[in-house]
Length: 230
Image 1 (cartoon, rainbow, N blue to C red):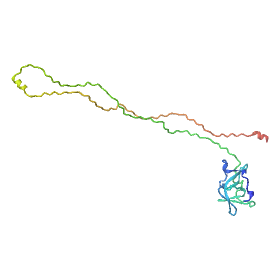
Image 2 (image 1 turned 90 degrees about the horizontal axis):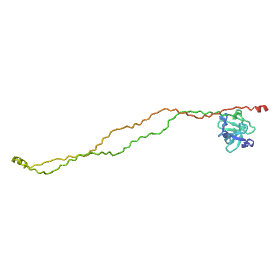
Image 3 (image 1 turned 45 degrees about the vertical axis):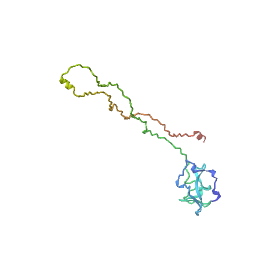
Image 4 (image 1 turned 180 degrees about the horizontal axis):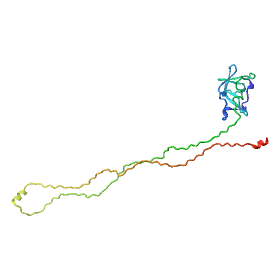
């Protein structure tokens, strides 16, 4: 590779750094391929494509060792790129610097429009929790209770009896009288007095939803003053 092949890097911009640029023919993206001589001696690996400032075309390649070579001397093959020295010419059907990988001289302005999709989704609206607790309270009532008491007392009696009555009275005997008392009795029985029913209802409500959708408007204005000066 002769020294007249090299150019100063500050003349170029790296293709990777130009976000709005791309190769017209993707097959001519030769980054990562080896650069070899016509006798297949490896010169280096192609690292990047360089766009000449102001020319809007790929004009050079950059090797991994930072050497720069003009594309006019390159012949692209499937798995390699052949460098032809000055004076040897470029084989028919190969790509020169401005042919095939050049962009159209045009500038593109994207027209963008936002599409707004309004829908609905289910969200958690909270919960109602009902808890039953057992509480105790005292129930009191005053009762009148009857208590019986057996009394034993002796009374004086001065009454004459017949001999027969006297014989009957003179026998052994026992008299028993039982006492009966009242006592408080407490009984409990459970009754269902109320029911708490937990359920839910759904209702439909209308809600007005607004969102801003942006779009690109294109205004074309002709410079008439410039045309008049011409």
